[in-house]
Each structure stands twice: as structure tokens, then as C-alpha cells.
Length: 102
Image 1 (spheres, rainbow, N blue to C red):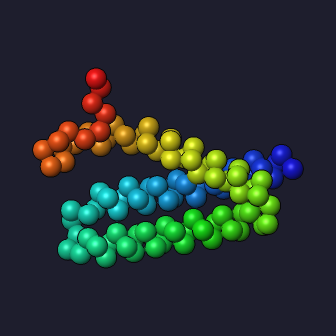
Image 2 (cartoon, one colour):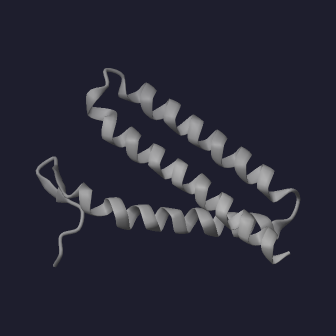
């Protein structure tokens, strides 16, 4: 049982890493595209398909497995925010965005 939950946690972390890396890449490329709305919608659809189908396959009807995968997803997000957060210290619309280090 514990080994199953650890595996579900790891799969959730992998899904989260792919999901949030895809989001990061979409936002970074928005200024370079001619049709940003299309890019955002397509990226959202693909990421949702990945997320929902991945959780459905991991869950197999047991809520404990879903919870383990969701914890993995949330921790993957936290890891990526901490890792990539310092790279986002840019000026957006004249307002400093990111870690202001007050």
C-alpha cells in the first residue's frame, strides 16, 4: 500500500512538472507569437487533458491514490516556483514583477 502511494506521489510530481513547465513555456512564448489567444487556449487544453487523464489513470477508483498524486503535483509546483521564480524578475508594464526582496 505504501509503495503504491509513493508511486502515485511520484507520478503526480511528474504530471505537475510537465503541467507547470508547459505553462511556463506558454507564458514565455506569448510575446513571440502572432496569435497569443490560440496558443493560450491550446496550451490550456493540452495541459488539462494531461492532468485529468493522468489523475484518472493513477487513481484507479481509490481516493488515497488521487490524494498522493495531488500532493506530488502541488510539491512539483512549489519546486518549480522556487527554481524558476528568480528568473521572473522582469519589468512587466513598468511594474517590477517577481521577488522584490523587501
